[in-house]
Image 1 (cartoon, rainbow, N blue to C red):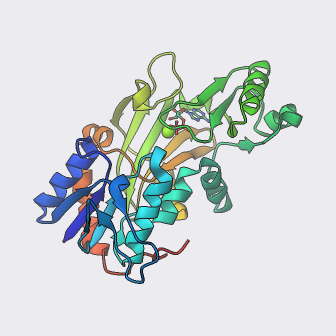
Image 2: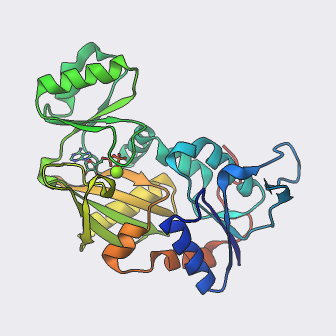
Length: 301
Ligand code: ADP
Ligand code: MG
């Protein structure tokens, strides 16, 4: 098959691994810089132009869209969908997953376990907002944050009030969330491909830190999932409409709760921790599923 990886940087581990794994399976794999794609959106024969030429008709694309380029990146994926190209994750599902508030609302609607979470625009009734999520300590999150930046633990009610007021004063959108203390600074990353958890790792935060992000010094190790955790991860990916997803779960006293669902999960940490060839599994899924005009939305909103 002829497959494009949409990535801004061909030296990234995940991009390199995907190219290598695809070629090892006999596919022709191109790395296409998403931001250098441009298109005539009004043509009745949709195409994507790249460095002065039309791109060939790919059988599939693998979008690796960074959080900072979601808007343009999803427009490029939508254009491929209009051409009938199979995208492992569809543009609408990627956009959905990038908005933490929208994601939590969708997951809640389908009964997926979540930490109690509140959202407000004005600091009118901070005491009530805090009470609704069970009171301090709470975790306060910037909606646009990634890699643990913009995630703050407020240990007391006073601290929570000050932080919420400060963020609101800056007109930042925030979530106020129950702090899952019993998770002990660890979370579980489940890699879901085609409705199956193909790899899972536990990430443990550095001493004195509650955020387990590898970018914040967290350490990853292999973990065995409980059936409830496996079911939660699969359901979360399904609700978000993602064929490939990194579902992050906390072990709470009330069972597994989902923190976030990532549509371009990194491969380096999970391949190292689990010794699994996740990149190969992504191509095997594409081999099975990629047929022309098979995306659900075909470029529709
Ligand atoms: P980001 O998108 O920046 O990674 P997350 O919501 O994943 O933001 O939070 C970063 C880290 O903070 C998580 O991996 C987890 O270790 C910790 N964390 C986030 N929310 C909670 C919570 N409600 N209770 C306990 N720990 C949390
Ligand atoms: Mg995270």
